[in-house]
Length: 252
Image 1 (cartoon, rainbow, N blue to C red):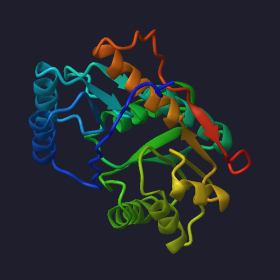
Image 2 (cartoon, helix red, strand yellow):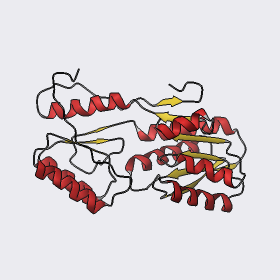
Image 3 (cartoon, one colour):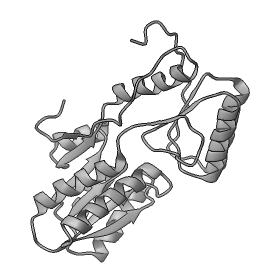
Image 4 (cartoon, rainbow, N blue to C red):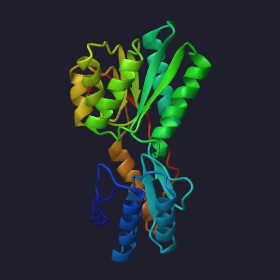
């Protein structure tokens, strides 16, 4: 239990933030003082540099959901993203069958290593086990409605037989709406994370499955790493988050 510890988090949330602004924000965390930083950020040299300076100043950094493996962060907490991508490929190939066709992988931003690893796992599994499914990249919608809608619409206009999508990031309502606006069937759609938007899409049966993980367990693991760094908790081995598959019929 975390009950004996008084933990007072400060949150900084951004839909979009450039690497320099993120670097400056991390630097200010060092100036204000902190016992630890939990970070979901793009894998950029400036951000890695800021993380290294924090750790050198005695402030531990734990990456969450997407990793910065080239930095001095003390730990990564989250699912095995390659395994998640392989899971999506397995499900999608089973639902689509053996007909040769294109499938789209929609990436919010290629700067996030977690999304990149999901795509890599997805591609590798299909290449080895379902080579009749050819992967089409749709990227840089940033998980935001308008740019995601525009990029998916363009892909649909250029690929008239596209009817299956694996979305590794956000903006899933925009994907559904782009197919609907052109009157195109979305035969199989697999997404990530059981947020409010994806809950609604599952309830509407617009998404076949969501790949999720237990954020409460992740939060506990984050704080265990930080407490262990400060020698106030002896943490044992911590495994990656278990991949969970949620459909419209087991929606919690």
